[in-house]
Amino acid sequence: MTNLLDFTLPELTDWMRAELGEPDFRAVQVWQWLWQKLARDFDSMSNVSKACRARLAERARIVWPDVALVRESGDGTTKFLLRLDDGALVESVLIPSDSRSGARRWTLCLSCQVGCAMSCSFCATGQTGFERNMSLGEILGQVLTARAYLGDSRPDRPMLRNLVFMGMGEPLLNLSEVLRALRCLNDDRGLNFSPRRITVSTCGLEKGLEELGTSGLCYLAVSLHAPNQALRAELMPRAARWPLPDLVRALKAYPLKTRERITLEYLLIAGVNDGLEQAGELARLVNEVRGKLNLIVYNPVENLPYASPDPERVLAFERFLWKRHITAVVRKSKGLDISAACGQLRARHL
Image 1 (tube, rainbow, N blue to C red):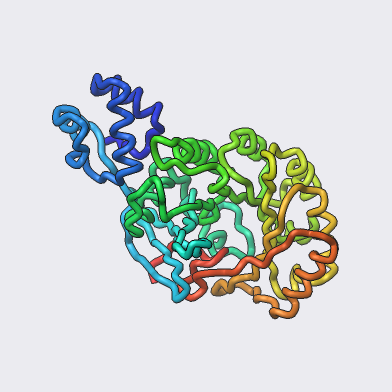
Image 2: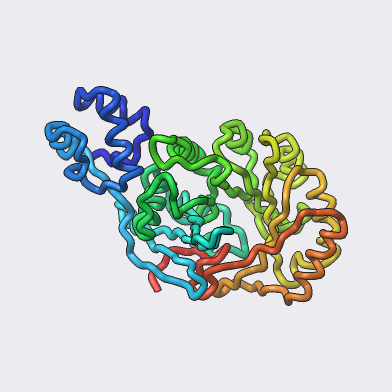
């Protein structure tokens, strides 16, 4: 049976017209029940006729991911192990922050693939291999699960404010479903997220980058992790098939709105890419792009031969960039105690 979460609004409208003979406004009502009111069954759709609800129940389902495990960190981060309809496992992470008013707001780190095909040498997900792409409903089902967990039922003042596609998988390798998800997220009749509150992070692949930028549906983050092609090929062998100079040229031409900048992500690994020589190369590279730099201290992953640099070395790297007028910030890792930090997701039972 059809999972209604796998439809965009135009697709749902067409399907209800063809299958149920329902007018277009009825699809909007159902859509709002799915995405704004977090309905998990048709009986709760009180402004939809009983006859329509009965026909919906005969032909369709509402399938959320099943929450197999929830782990909470001492810093407030929450990690979900989610079982999809076919039994596949993925993880998503809720990250807390406090607004200026003192109200708690949340960012959700989303997965878009079961596993990952990129095989980056420092990443837990990359060691698990690739299983399959996630569907529209599976991607956005993570948002529904997080909102339900938070009790976040007010679309006018949501607790869940930001979304980052930085979980399991490479978004550009599942671009068609990611773009469909972004269009649904941007729809003010549903989840109603502004593009400036959605960030899609990619390793930097030639295929799909321009299409993502042209869509205007999100902000872009690019994982560099190396300031030169040789080191990038060592750390990120599949991403490095597109030479770094070519990636930089594409980022220079990437369509940006007024005041929008690309986020460049750089993982600091002890003795590998955290020296001042690498900082100098990175400064020259970043200067070519309209962007800001996020420095991420490596988060330990079991059975991988890497370590975090000393705090003094991180500070020296950051100061070197500041002196060259590079906007660089060390991003604080959250959820380390539950393996929910950057590069630690691997979707396994513990």
